[in-house]
Length: 636
Image (cartoon, rainbow, N blue to C red; front, side, top):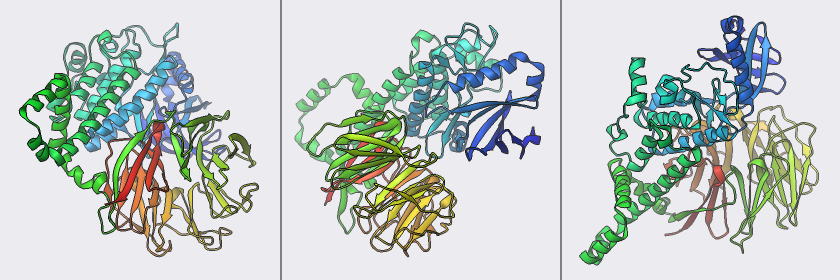
């Protein structure tokens, strides 16, 4: 079907070929009406002409998939039929399949496995809650996008649990053989637990670098699923903690009743294991500091009491985790730990961190702290408030189900919150008023004020708004740029910068009345920009992009080989100390104004979106799944 390239189908222009499968071909296309890229899965012509059953199944795929709206599931936009061809129009995901990620890396880091598995369980758990079974979970059907978000695709053989009539024949094997459950191999009916077996195979593949049963002979693979135990993962990864090995082995039980029964059950065990790993990690490093002192102080009797207090099982699991860390070289973590992070001539350091419990599990995009009063906004219209005198959070939820991206708090505690669908929310005395002041839907990403009256908002499709009266009235500043703008940084009342997609960097020298493009030598999207007081600026974005300028943004250089993960925010903490946050728990720090960088692993693998500071020197970071962490900085 290469003849479709560059053709226009309805309002979609076919741009390129993304991949081919047994039933169809997937193209990248441009939606001319909505100015966005989409993916279109086109059913192979012979299937349309020769098989009404396959054609009907393809339509059922579109209908089933369209019922599932979740951040970890590729969204279906519609269905097209043209020139005897059928196509499903869906979300285009800029990323790589998990299959390619495993192929490139051989096997994945244990924390990446947990991070991906949790998102996979979230998406499949949601599908199960809507009474749909995927039936073909495998690495090639899982995409990790450029921001670290897992997207599940290809519900081509998904089945509604409530269907009276299955589109597939009784006795047919549905799925991909390396990841099939025993009941799928036998051609029997499948259920939610069958998907969990496939998730187990996928986790096994991430950890071992190959599926649990691998052979060139299909019969041997099927025999493995039916009658053989998979090799213990410690044969591939000798230092794997037994707790994680146990979770995967339980997912791969032959009998359905012996497996986990729900995605939530798996998540609970993964989270418990993750907590144990973090606790053992912290104890391990603390123990290394005091081990010699403890050996002098504790007698043989106290050691015996210590052993009696803890159960044999706990000791076994912790020892497994410790062995994993020691053999993998985690003792070097101490060199990059929070406590020694900024031990420079400035004697600037982070002394500790803690995770705060919040009354939401939604993704949080913005954190504003004014006079130690907190405002956090995020997905589905969530707004959280906390006053400095209180330990409790006030939770508000807008009636409009929209993503909120940023907020600004004035000295009189009045707030402006912005988000998608051109949304402005004005908050005063506990009352929210929602406005959409533009004649079309824009996503509004960042709001900044120079003083109490002059402010700016930037957003999609080249949008720049300005106000001279504290946000009571907004006017649009026209430029020749049509890219999405993510962040604005006003250094003073005259000079400022905007960053956005395709490496866009705009600069103003007249207080924001006009903006000129400063080509950034990068084509990756840029999410955030910040300057210190000595003309040094840092901009960060997609695929680990870090740009640095020493002349107030006139020229930029690329800082290479730091990370490949998406970076979402950068802040100068002092003239030379800088912190960057990004996806999959990424935290980078520099003590030389961004020339060299160190990675800090807190063992918290959320996508981090925003940073803010309190007056007493504490640093707070918010991210995905309702996560808020606190870093405490201090003088050494």
